Length: 388
Image 1: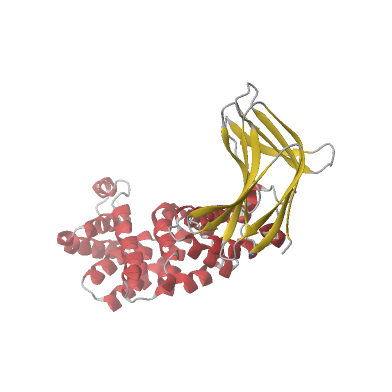
Image 2 (image 1 turned 90 degrees about the horizontal axis):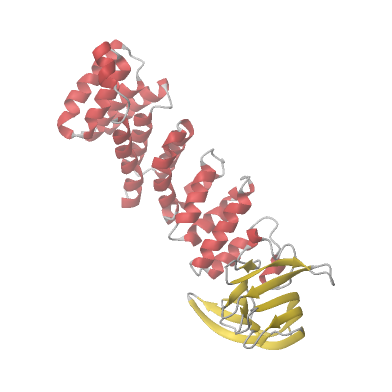
């Protein structure tokens, strides 16, 4: 059994014992009725937290069963004691008896997870996580972080894919947590693509957008490209195009669509051009301020490209300026490929993209200069085409 398998199983069982220790006032119930089986079982389960009290816990569990045989938690206590003594077959018999009575008993479900871990049975671990989460949604905060951490471990990948294809009710919460917290987002993206699970989620676009953002933040450019191309409805053209359209300005495709800064001093947004009837980019910068107000991720093959921009308006005082800058992205390093100044009208420039450039980022930059009114820019059209 690997450390990862053991950890996924063992800590679930520990959490269960701690959780059961918080059950409300079984001691008061026993003061009112010394033979109340559920209270006896709860007190017995509480005794599992320390090795020196396990014998007492076992005795209370047997007492609970004598009062009422149909007490799942009592069987769980006996199973826990058997597991602490490495009597795993006996523990499994107790757990099977408990689960026959109820699939909702928290201690039983957690111990099944632990038993599966002891045996190194990954499919069984995940199956029992699924049962625990399906039958008690309150366990999500406790179990999902451990389950999500295991998604990044290669030995779990195929079994996770089989599980998520069943579209369990806890899946969306798990995916959102995995995407937001993963240290290896490329592995989560690979699992999402292979399982096809995003086609089943009502919030699939939001999860996919978050996944793309995390891959870009981690500079996993190749993984971002592969993940994007596997998304339902994703326009392949957007990988090489800088057109300003409704699709290319949809924030749910970012960073492959245009994303815009919204700062107090520099900002950009989509506007509808009166002259063309098409969407364009509006940008402003206050006096003395400068920054990148719009950017778009690209995946261009090496070669010569003609960059063209048509601006309807550019106004600003002394020092005001605006330009497009194309950067080469390799891992976490950005290097400049070329820049093109923007003024009113149409400008074009040939840029050479290196063959070893994994991805590119096109940025629209604006400077407010020294004038009192800052700078304003309206971009009506952008185009990028390979010429050699």
